[in-house]
Structure formats: structure tokens, C-alpha cells
Length: 393
Ligand SMILES: *Cc1c(COP(=O)(O)O)cnc(C)c1O
Image (tube, rainbow, N blue to C red; front, top):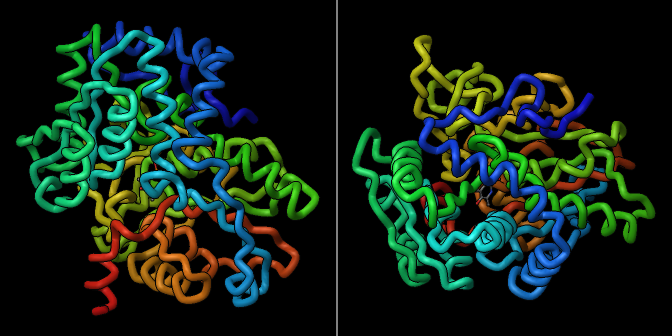
């Protein structure tokens, strides 16, 4: 079984590039160039150096002693929370801005929901001196004021999406419209392992630095490269794709993907796509998607803004369909408790997205000798308001 993308841009039956005719030249140019560019030694050198000196990689692989004692298993945390800007998203935006430069682009557009991807994009645009326009739903602009301020400080223009539900999907539509109108000078930086081929594969490859590092770090600490399990939360699926990538074809490594169940899978307020989703097309690819009987996309819900997405990337849809990965849905309450516990036991306040991955420790029994690597995708500073409200701190 192959879990990587095939030549046609598919993972099994999922993936592809379902795009308006007018975007075809852009996407096709990217498809023809991306692997060549990523294999170029000068590109690799520049990417590696920025990851080291600007992002602060390698991120540590930390043995969580007290958490391990509590669950009677060996738990390691991959510390993506320690990256510059506080999460894994910057791995992808650094890669894509270098790609944009190689393709001769001078202007960057992005969509953002909670603002995290917008901030990561605005950051690398400041770094490279590139024009940056971030589309964001009007409702999200009001809800995520600190991230809007960050983007402005970083020199980005934040353009409100005023149509529809005025949230992420409307921002995405605006970004696509912009790209159609500016096909020559503009690169569209998509923020997760989603979108038309080659985006899911390109984003996955940029994020795969996570599992590449886990391998040699685990070899140093445990004497072997492969853990028994890797665990990551899934919104669109980029931190999970990066965490899983180098283990996909290692049969002895169990893969656990954690989705946001919101208030509960059956409550109508959920974002557990593997359970609730059916095949459909979103953001230019065929994947699992939460939708009504007649194919309208359903509004997802999660307490965590980064997991509040109605689909999953096509690679994950394939991992689910083939049974290669185990999918577990975790409620808001379970995630919040897990986040509080990690803070108390290890002195690490996780992003609420990442807290979902930690909640798995309560629902799944690992053996004492199991080595479990959990990807700590981001830090909790941005979520302090939510923690305060929830726990009445
Ligand atoms: C955006 C975000 C996620 C979800 O996005 P993926 O593409 O699924 O990784 C998870 N964790 C953090 C900290 C995020 O900012």
C-alpha cells in the first residue's frame, strides 16, 4: 500500500485538483516546478538555514517524565510549540515563501480563520520583504483581534471577507478570486495539507521535518528510530502529516490522528470529519467533508479555532479509509482537561489544538514499554482567554 501521493495527485481515491479553469496555469506551473525546486541544493540549504537560525530548529524531543509516570508508559513530546511564532505552521510558510521566490513571485496572498496561518504568512513576508494580503472573514476579524494586530505590525494587509458566513470558507473564496485576478505575480500560501494537488504534498513535505527529526532524536534517546505510536491532532492535517510522514510505511509504528468532537460527535456541534464526513470536494480537492444530504458544507464547531474545519486533507482521508491510522475524536471538555493536566504535570501550557492530542492518554491504554510520541503542535499563549473562561481562572 502506498500512502504518499501518486503521479496524478491522488492518495487512493482522494486528492486531485478540482479548480476553476482560470487557476489552471498557476496550479499547473506549481505542479511542474515544486519537486524540482525542493530538490535543488541551494533551495535545501536556504530552507535548512532558516529553519535553524530563524525558526529555532531542531525542536526538542522531550521525555515527559511525570506524564509518563501518570499513564505508566513512555511519552515523548515533539516541541513544535517552541518554534518562532509558537507553532508548526511556520515550517510550511518558510518553505512556501522560498518556493514563491524561486517561481519569480513578488506578492503573497493567504486565507486565515483564527489568524494563526495569517500570522505565520505575514511573518515570512516581512522576513523576505514581500507584499502580503491576508483574507479573513469579517466575523473572525472581530473574534481574533490580537492576531489581526500582529499581522498589521508585520506589514500585512488584512482584507475582510464580507460574504456568506464571513468566516474561513469565505476568506478562502476571496483568496481564490484574488489569485484568478493576479495570476502572474502572486503566490497563494495555503496553510494546511489541503487544497488542489500539489499543495497537500508540498505542505506535507515542508512539515515532514517534524518526523525526520523525531527519527534521529529517538535514535539518540531510545537507541531506535521508530516509536510504537505517533499521535497528532488534525484540523486540515498539516502538523499530523509532518509527524506521520516518515513513519507511514513503517508497519510497526501505530499512527493516531485526533479530531475535535466539539460538544460531542452526535450533538451537531462537532468537527470530527472522519466520523461525520462523506466524500466531497472542498478547497480544490476530493476528500472527506462534513456536508448535508444535498452536499452543502456544514459549519463545523470546536472550542479550538485551529481544528474548526469541515474537512481533512486527502492524505488523512486515505489513512482513515485504509485503516492505516486510527482516528479518535476528543470533546472540548476532554481536551481542556488534558491541557490543564499538561500544564500542571510538565509546566507546559499547550495550544488547545494540541491539548486534543494529549486527551488520547485518557481514552487509549498504552503498555509500560510503549514509546509514544505526541506532537505538541503549538503553545497556549494565544488560547489564554479560552482557558480563563473555561476554568474561571
Ligand atoms: C493551525 C493549528 C493546528 C491545526 O492545523 P493542522 O494543519 O491540522 O496542523 C493545530 N495546532 C496548532 C497549534 C495550530 O496553530
